[in-house]
Structure formats: C-alpha cells, structure tokens
Image 1: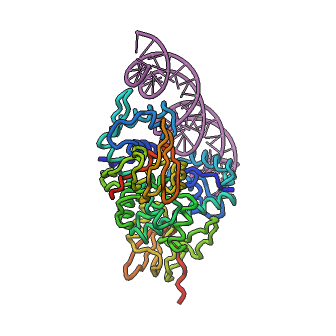
Image 2 (image 1 turned 180 degrees about the vertical axis):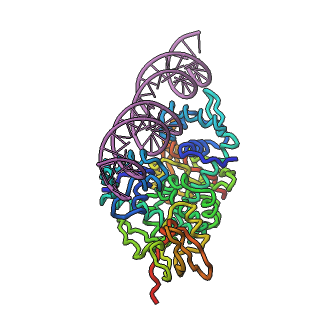
Image 3 (image 1 turned 180 degrees about the horizontal axis):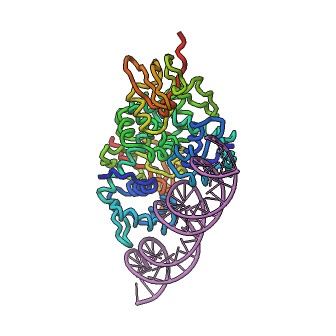
Length: 222
Length: 222
DNA sequence: GGGAATAATAAGGGCAACCTTATCTTAATC
DNA sequence: GATTAAGATAAGGTTGCCCTTATTATTCCC
C-alpha cells in the first residue's frame, strides 16, 4: 500500500494538512489559505483526496487525514526535512530559502533516494528549523512544546522550532532572531490580540501574535 | 535572459535534443521516439519551443537548438549530471538508477542549489557515466570520442562514456561490463548491421550495433 | 431566532501536454 | 516519375488542477 505515486498537488495538500494539524480536522478555508488557492478549488481537491481515501471530509466541519493520508503526509514531510538538512548542513544554503528549495526537491524524490539521503546525513532527528523528521513509515512524535503565542508574560522559554512555510514569515522571524535554541522572555503582551514584546538575546523585539503562533517553545526549566 | 522558468516537459525536450545532437538538426521522429510521445505531439511541442525561441524548426528537415535553447539545455544537463555525481558518490545509489533519479531531481533544482551542489561535489568534470558536465553557463566541450559502433574490427579502445537514457539500455550495457574506463577489443562484426563481438575484461560479449552507438570510446593508444 | 461568516455545489472556462484519427505535403529512392 | 516513408496539419478528446460567478446550505454567535 501507499505505493501509488501521488501528484505534486496532492502531496502539497497532505503536507499542508499535516503541518496545520496532525490529527484533528482542518477547516477548508485554512487549507485554501495556506495553499494559496480559492475555497472552491480546495473543496474540489478535498473531494478528490477523499475519493483516494487520503482524507475524511465532514461537510461544514472540515477535513482530517486518514491513516493512509497521515502516512503519506509524514513521508512527504520526511523528504522535505531531510532535504532541508542537506541544503543547510552540506550546501550551506541560506536559512530563509531552505523550505522553498527543499519543497521543490521533495516531490522529485524516490523512496530509495530518501532512505539513502537519511543514511548519508546520519539519520537526523530534526530539520534545521527544529521540526521533527518523521520515520521512514511516516510516523513521528510531535514536538513537546507550545506556540509562543500562548506563553504568559514574564516567562522565559526556549525556542524548539519554527514551523512556518510562508517565505515572508520565515524571513520575518529570522530577522528577529527567533531560531531554534534561542532563549527568549516574554516581557509584555498588548491587549486585544496585540503584539508580544520579547527579549531575544539582549534585544527587544515586537512580534505580532499570529506570527508568534509559528514559534514553538518550551518553558525554560531553571 | 534565460531567467524564465521552463516547464518540465520543455526541459525534457531540450535535453533530448542536446543528447541526440548538440548542434545539428534532429528529426522529429527521433525526438518523439526518445521522449516516448507520438510524432504529432512532438510536432506540437516543437512549435511551442520555436515560439519561445528555443529551437529552430525547418519543416520536413528537423529541429535544431538555438543559442538560447542550447544554453538552457546545457543547464538542464548540468543539473542532471551533478545530481548523478551526488547520488553515485555520496548516496551510493545503484548505477542503473542514477539517470532516472537524477532526472527527477534536475527539474526541481534552483540555480543557487545547482551551484552550491557543484561546489560541494568539488566541481566534477564528468558524471559517473563519463559524460562531461556543462559549465554554469550551459556550455560544454563534447567528448573527443567516437561511438563503439564505428570502431573497426581488431581495434582496442577505451570506454569514455555511456550516453544512454533508456533504463533498459543502461542496464543492458552495465550487465555487459561496458563502463567508463574499460578497455575493450572489437573481435568481430556481423554483417548487415549485425551485432559486434567484444572482448571486455577477459569476457566475450555480443552487442547489438544500435546499442553500441551509446558507448563512446577512444582508440587505445599504445 | 436571525444574521454573518463559512462551506458546499453547480456551471462554465482555461491551460499545458498529451492522445487518436485523418488528410495532405515533402523528401528520398529506385 | 511513381512509390513510400516521414513529417505537417486539422479537428476533437482527455486529465489534473486551477479559476470565476452564483446559488444554496450550515454553523456560530449575539
């Protein structure tokens, strides 16, 4: 099973769903937004995906990956993140370009190449952005962290991962020093969904709440 | 110039033309054959390519790459052969799979990645099959050799390159030990376009003439 | 319970790259 | 100069994935 090759578009939908939400239902609108297509197109495509048994669509509720879909999605994510490692560690490609370049390569990568790449890289556990690399069977343990947007004022946290796909978002976060491993303190949170004020490496940084969602952190113990 | 991204199909046509014949005209039938499409489809596509200024089509004569097309083709070939080096040298992918896997990757490779890959690999001059890797501007010097099919009986030659794209052909030649660097002697040639008989590493091998065309050799001096 | 936002469906189109079938043109060869 | 093979052209079809516009259905929330 799962030997039928999926189209590039199919892979992008599956990956988007996995990135948005591993298990629960994803609203068609969010999916459409992330993939930059209209809601009508997303609807059409979700129908096709559910015909293939990759997602389960509950009208007016959203779509969720099936077991098969989750496996396929994990596989796509694995390929992408392995390529990100290669592009970053070996080719020294710019941080902000990794996602984009790896995304192109991922669709063109045969299973044999994926596994050889993993071995070559020493079976890394996370991509340069800090996200876990799924196993060969597509399974993976989500990070044990919370979005920065949910951290309360005064707390100090450590960045585990940056989980964004839009180039502008990646660039924006990179410019503000929000990289895996960094220690940051939330010094203030403006009311009404306003921006957070952060202390990042002796630097004061303002960050919109919707962008803070892409930064996965753990509470800094000690 | 040459900054507009070409479709995968376009790249395949350009590459096929470059592989079939760097400079001269290629018959539409040969092109169609190599790309596994009908002559009608190839005709259509050649029209599109000539509208883009990539080829010059002379009706009933064939198509030839323009300067622009040759550059673009060289670039595609460069990407593919660099990936072949990577897959072979670093990932230890099987010889007979290199072409196929590298071909998928080549279409998904940005210029920045191509150049970083070249640096990473130490700017190799040839791919594992022995074919030259074009420079970043797409230019390259063809091998100074002749097809094995044109060697006369009794001569001893050295294999410079295997220049095939069809998997079956690659497998067939590989099984018979026809690899770059091998020394072979043409011991007989059957009449009427019949097969050649070769001495390859103390082994006697029969090889169809149309397959011998894919093996580029140089006369063994001394 | 009613209005707003979101989602679904229908209908019609577009584009790239392929296909088939059929007709016509040119080139190559005896 | 006629035949044949190869190439060109026309017409119509398919598939995947996207689009717009319009209508209808559902859910959520005050």
